[in-house]
Length: 400
Ligand SMILES: Cc1cc2nc3c(=O)[nH]c(=O)nc-3n(C[C@H](O)[C@H](O)[C@H](O)COP(=O)(O)OP(=O)(O)OC[C@H]3O[C@@H](n4cnc5c(N)ncnc54)[C@H](O)[C@@H]3O)c2cc1C
Image (cartoon, rainbow, N blue to C red; front, side, top):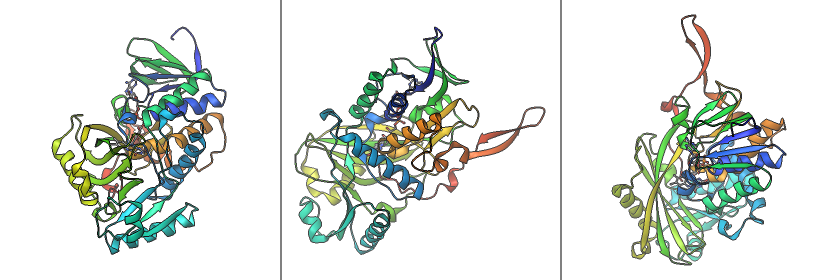
């Protein structure tokens, strides 16, 4: 690899974001190498839920999730069965009148932006999901939301890139990224015109000044109970509880898998760096789930695991040139939406490299939004550095 091959694009990280970038670049005729320490999709991508969801936290978040969702729908027709893509729709569940008002506000917001959705009454909700608890106020059904099995989808994207000539370097750890090259732990180098940094939450291991923090999440999966739930079910209550950025939190978020299994989420923790499952978080998640789905207590939960999201202060990913090195493009910081937003991220990255006008404005995701001038060195040089102020990150409205 250090033998003089110079690639157009070299990608560090073979999660769903790196794999999607590899495919988007290969589809544009670029020569691509992708380096992954373990197996394709084995990081946060394997730990995630695979809810392809349109979100309304900000216009920028909406633009990226909606574009991505449309790209997923286009891709779906040709995905293999192993990717388990299903258009299930999301039911945003309102527990009371105040939450129903929030559902109605969401309905108007989405309708104005041509996202198909409808409000369900309490009776319609009970008919749609008979295992839900009684006494709920209603729900918003967002019909184009979908479900995918993320590691299988990531592998498919990487294989497609490979068929277009991309080289996959698997089982190879990266120790440094910069100046048009990726240096591997074994001493080899991959050189390229553009280097994409797509290491997910591990991005901070190689670039500690990035405005990213690891945010731990737990999920639980049950045995097979086909038909127990039909839609992705998410509580709207997370809007009211407005968890702080520092506190641990759980939210009701349940997904039917094609296998008949039920994926139960989810938790969010800052400052928990160890990957072990924590019983108190699992118990809190299951208790929350049982409030909405009382029958869930009678199901057999077969496994729990954790993963790390790459969180940024403004809940938007970092997509675009690194402040310190224009040869490096960042594609990380996708927090709890990286399965959804991987495809649009890849298009933005490929558009940047090939100088094409992107389908949505790229400015909200540029790492430069965190730039601050800083004086350094004996000659008092001015340089740009990342300023990471988490105190203005605001309430946590994430669900995944
Ligand atoms: C509990 C949970 C639930 C989630 N649910 C959803 C959901 O429903 N919908 C959604 O859209 N998103 C969800 N997410 C978020 C989603 O999983 C992530 O945003 C997404 O997987 C990020 O992909 P990535 O490619 O950036 O990172 P990763 O998948 O982590 O990929 C990074 C890759 O880099 C590799 N790597 C790291 N260090 C090195 C190194 N030094 N050398 C070489 N390779 C290296 C890793 O092995 C890994 O494969 C969830 C996340 C969690 C934790």
